[in-house]
Amino acid sequence: MQVPLQSNGRSGGRRELMAHSSQEVVGLACRPGSTVIWPFGAIEQHGPHLPLGTDALFAERLLERVLLQLPAEAPIWRMPLHCLGFSPEHLGFPGSLSLPAELLIGLVVAVGRQLAEAGFQRLVLFNAHGGQIALLQVAARQLRVEAPSMAVLPCFVWSGPAGLAELIPEPERSHGLHAGLAETSLMLHLAPELVGELPPPDGQLGGVPPPGWSLEGAAPTAWLTRDLSATGVIGDPSAATAVLGDALAERLVHGWTALLQGLLASPWPQRG
Ligand SMILES: [Zn+2]
Image 1 (cartoon, helix red, strand yellow):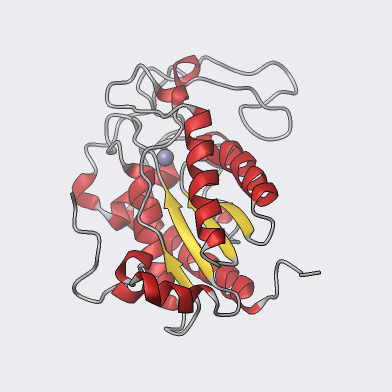
Image 2 (cartoon, rainbow, N blue to C red):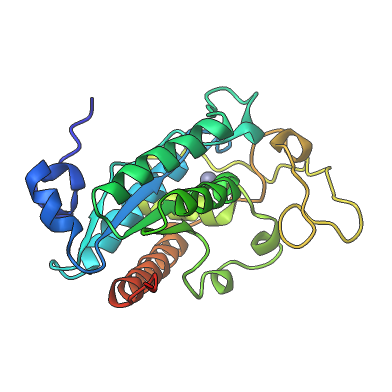
């Protein structure tokens, strides 16, 4: 097992829920606005040039940076990364792994209920995999019903912070869904040693939705990767750079820091 506790203090080991004793947790949970944040990734193909754990790495590294921005006394503690997600759209590409939806929903509800019973007042799901946004929203709603005293906030890392879209030109902004310009650039910034040779444009983007329909958004289709791409890339990473990745990371970290500060300073959820 990988040793989860930071020893160099980089992300402040005391931000890790696991670094505290059972007795200490009693005190943490009863602090006003006590919040647990739980990062979620996935293990799934990301084209020929990015690692299977791309989304997991994004959730982990971005959360680490965001927590460093928050005041030491802020009442927020993190869970270890949950890196096995819901990725059935990528099955068939070797190395892609996916949990059954009901298992992942059950996990979030069961663990969340225990955090609520321990007295924590909020749980933020910090998810970097677009294919499990809806699933985590369902899990969050179910958990809220079963543990109404605890707020549950199912976030997607790439939506929330302002100013991301303007960094990505069209058509990539609309069609670069997976392992394209944005993800590849962010990986070139965060972990360039894990990036292989950038593939040329796929040219296989044959699956065009019917008129008025889209892959995601207002009138979506439950697409499978093989509908759209032979390489596993949905989009075009060929123009990706570490400079763009740096700009994306800065806005992501700044945006999530501001969102968490707003949450921590608020009385949400209202009581009574
Ligand atoms: Zn991804």
